[in-house]
Length: 113
Length: 115
Image (spheres, chains in turn blue, green):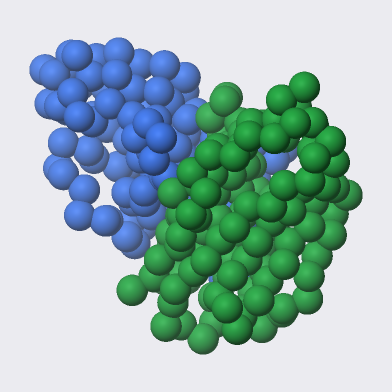
């Protein structure tokens, strides 16, 4: 199993809603990532979890709240988002060490209305 | 600061032509990794290759080849005999390892292969 699975694939939410994005991998990877990708732009790192602990937060607004319940799951909780937060949210995972290549999921395409 | 520049925003060629995607990077690290990823319309980023800073050997994989030149800080990607299925956005990325991978991506090159 060499996949990173993200759900849902598409999400439309209002600015007052609370929603969650989910990511799952069963490759035994111990690092998991959230990236944000705006249209026609490259992915930008948001958060990194290493061994289920938050190791990198790239100054992301608090309306985005990550959670890593176990080594296979990664969630991104969304609350009070703005229309400019509409983007493709990509999850990735990698094995430990500098040679660990990231495997990306297909992403959740989020629209905030 | 780390930076990756892909000067070609869009490239359009006819099928079977060869095409080269350019990538220039900046880093002060002596140990680093460079990557190429492919992003088809479906959205996922597909890993193509990793090259470390100590290995300047060029690599060929089928129709794909990569030329890494440390002297010019470039890591270019060539597709030989392009096919319509090669149409995608291609990203070059530089890695700084901080306990986990921290990828810095270039702006991407949108490649269109016309039949």
